[in-house]
Length: 492
Image (tube, rainbow, N blue to C red; front, side, top):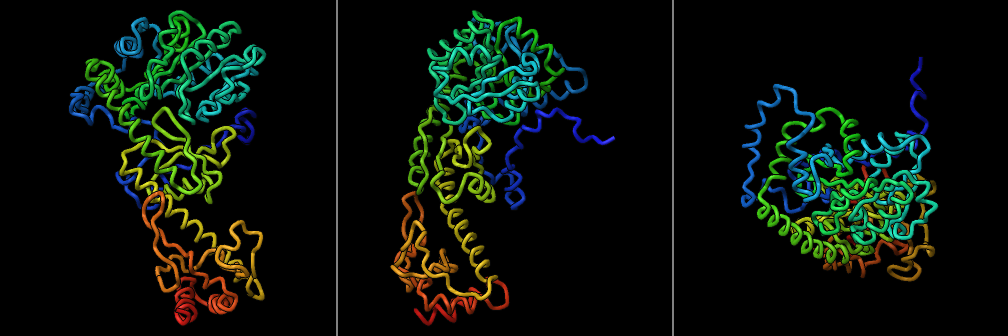
């Protein structure tokens, strides 16, 4: 019997995962330690374990936890839930807490417990595609709402919606929803018996006063998600918590996978949650200040990259519009990954196409390296495209100059009547100032070779001579060297 078609038809609509930037970098021979991750939303200041003032030591945790692997774990997580309740709110009890291994784990529990086939689920456009996946698997029909439309979402939509899931601050724009607006939405959801799920896993690096956790004890249709992963920069220990009404938390703890959090992750979580409040506050205050200062620098540097439009943000990343750039988001992120620099391609988010990237805040020296690399990959892309076009020209018979491309938006880029066979100089960057080219300073920083006063490869008489050499036998690199020596040098 063939297994083809045994799965639900609805799961075929689940979007495939993004290209793995880490894998691309490693395949290019870049070591794990040399990779700089601008795609992560974790605290860019590093974890408390890296800061002596926090007085935490991972080695001590390792030694204490080792023996715990020899027996069954406490699936009730009584100590962990009590510590989380104390950390997240004075009116929250352990019975309100659902421990989870990451935000996605909470969404999976909620989806499998609440959604029935045909139920409408409202997601903000910025929802991680993984959250959409669990809604679809559970039989939900997903509908997206743009961030700015949540304030005025219609009663008709609310009446049909079983769940509304949004992130505060927004997972794409980085904008913060006001607490007033969210409470208004919560009240309307209550009228229509709609569950409001608010993912606050990014909130600690922004403005924690906007949290809805303190509303949990008074309502039955709210679930708030909080995470230690982003707050404390521990992507390898993605511990999160669902915080909700006691009855709903009881159901979710039944649905939760048995012992879903391992002993080491639990020990790490307890050490963070039980930190003295003055030490934790100092660490988080410094983290928010670090984010603000370095986000402003990131905005300024990206804003100087030609045709990059960074959007204002309230959190630890910046959304960048690259729709007018020469590379789309997919090619740009792939080429940067090959250099060990990971940014988030937003094409997997609803309605974003290939027009946006998300860049997280990092130290200024890392930002400088990223902006310099962007300039490099733009040039590399143009050169690769030009060489592809050149090879197509050389494959045609007879091989002859193309003439002027008057449809090109940059025409004439050198002089009127030029020949556009070589839309991008095959010798770039030649570095030879005898051509009229020169090194110039980029507005975004660093130097770049400019061909502004060189039009040699666009003159009709030179194009034919270059083609005569390039259509010969041999490797392209060897033919280019020969073309330079035999055609370009005599002109200089």
